[in-house]
Image (cartoon, rainbow, N blue to C red):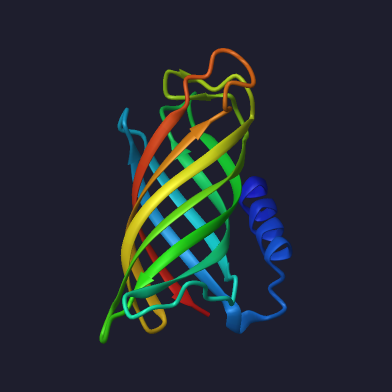
Length: 171
């Protein structure tokens, strides 16, 4: 497990270009799947540094998200995954806090093709996410739903859904 975590974090840092530490955010999340498996996630985000469709209501922004997830199972069912996703965020204008909604579609690689009693068929999975939250200056807290599926590339395609609470801080 230590090799997976170390390799995952190294890949995340390289993939996001951590040379600009001020533009990077650290994310930690804890969640559950629909079958009650606990998930622990650690990730790095890097803002697109662009705003589109700005109005009196808010603006569209986004970030790159790279993450490592540990899927806690029984002795034979633990799993690990690495993921990379562009995430688009609509930030509503706020004074003390900025509410937002996010949507992203990315890719993930699982160590094993089984999670709980689900057969994923392939280690490669698509990662779809929908989330809501609040941003306070350098910190963010939110709720997120993530669905993993191989998109029908191979049968069976059981897929898996996870729901998490996440906290993010700008480094």
